[in-house]
Length: 163
Ligand code: ZN
Image 1 (cartoon, rainbow, N blue to C red):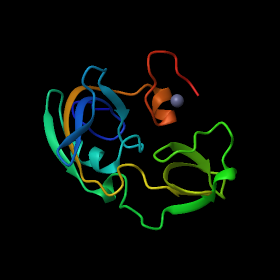
Image 2: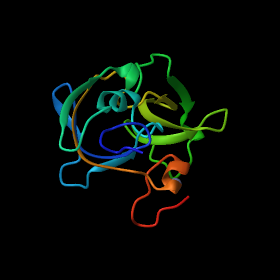
Image 3: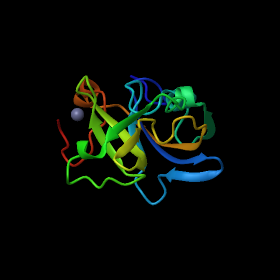
Image 4: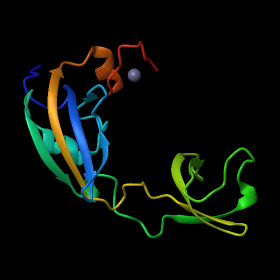
């Protein structure tokens, strides 16, 4: 397998900054580069697609539309819940983030949008839903995945992570 450029089933190490509305909201500065296995849904689809073919040392500015990132903002993705439906140990306050189990038993991210008396409004939109993402990415390493990483579809860190 060739690892001289970004392509499916290669592990990429990258440095990045992420801006939304000209404001930096995330960055690898001061941390280890982000490592991910390409082609297994480990990062948003638009980012992978725009990075294809990059070589070590190369950097790019990439703009990703919501549909290829965290989705469009969904006006319907709100739900009203009575306050006493929350477990006692959860701080019920506006802006609080939590995971809730939906009817299908799936864990879903939610944020408390508004509290009106005993009515709590949950917002299920991802915090970056509807946002155009501006990445600056730099590839700092490319390697073959281990057979186990390939089998799992994600990178294993050096700390013996396994699951
Ligand atoms: Zn694993």
